[in-house]
Image (tube, rainbow, N blue to C red):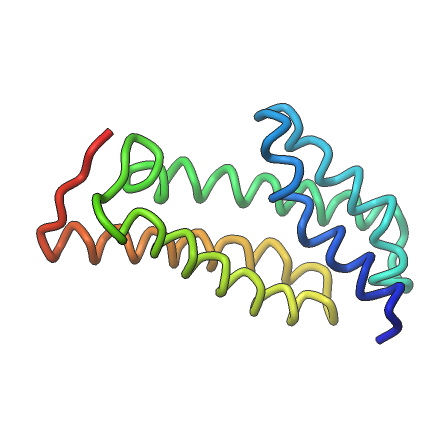
Length: 135
């Protein structure tokens, strides 16, 4: 993989993180970044298809967050080290999933879902072990 392609892949896969501080409406930028920079990562796919991949990733992230993650890390969060363990585990799983998505773009929404579900699993583990949650 060329350094240029690696940089574009980091820009595409990192877009959910660096666009998030711009607010909730900035999430619409993910499909735009994917369509714009994704052709270097997945040259065999059209911009239209890459835009669809970005939209699917956003829909997956929002859906999984609302259904699963919100209950453990959205309303409040576990106390102590548990507050950062969940997101850290999610990040590690996301990075591992994105390495697989560099081969096939439709794995990116799956990688996003699995990463968010791993955050939920840490929240469930914290709740099961009696960790106090605060909002």
